[in-house]
Every structure is written in C-alpha cells, then in structure tokens.
Image (tube, rainbow, N blue to C red; front, side, top):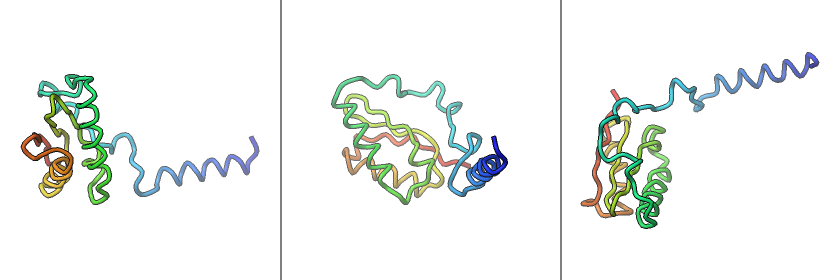
Length: 120
C-alpha cells in the first residue's frame, strides 16, 4: 500500500473517530441489565399482524420526532394484544412524557404503559 493511501485511510479513521454525533460502542444506550426479569419483554410480543403494525407505527412516530435524543429513539416498543409497553432509558422527564405522547398519537393513551426510566 502506498504512503498516500495509508495517510488517506488514517485521516478517514481519525475523522470518523472524532466526528460529533457518532457514538462508540461504549457510549451507546444499553439498559439490558435493567430489563432482565421485567415483563413484558420483546420476545413475548406475538407475531400477530395487528401487533406488528402497531409496534411499527409507534416506532415510526417516535423516530420521526427529531427533538428526541438517541436514547429516546432506541426505546423498546412492545405491542401485545393491542397494548403498547415502552421501555428503556431517556434523558429527562420531559423526554419520557414526549415519547409517551408520540406513542399515544398512534394508539390511545389508555393503551400505553410507560416503563421508561430517566438516565441518571
């Protein structure tokens, strides 16, 4: 490999490493330890088309909200028999309410169980 190409690859690596907005694996939201032993879990979601479509619509509504953090965009959405459970960490109480509101825009608020936690 010639020196110009090596320098180009090294520059690209540094640019990607220090680019704002890019998260390393250690920085990405992970609340797996908190979710152990909680119910319902994503593996309990049925394969019913209505539940899949409901979860998809709620997920789209949450991801479409560009005011939310990456934590909020990565919350777990579990649809089971028409009920929606939201799980995972968010950055603030306001964001917790906003995610629930986005979910309620797809399904009625009385069918939403908000189990989101505020990241400390």
